[in-house]
Image (tube, rainbow, N blue to C red; front, side):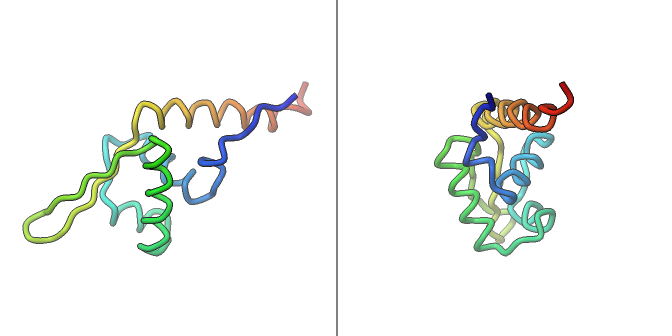
Length: 97
């Protein structure tokens, strides 16, 4: 009756990260930390889970002499997000039919 919701995206913080990245070409770690209002450690952990799932890429470098971590959603991540939203709509629209 209902399609399964992606367990990777069915986490408030991971869903927030992907939702932010879906509309951006890329985002810096600090930006994601500020927008999600989470700790650096928790954000790192959740980004690692998204990276292992193939949903994001993470690039580490420098901006001047400061470390810079940049995140970008992958095509797989976009497809997973779109599927998640469609599956979630089933739950929301169920009683409207």
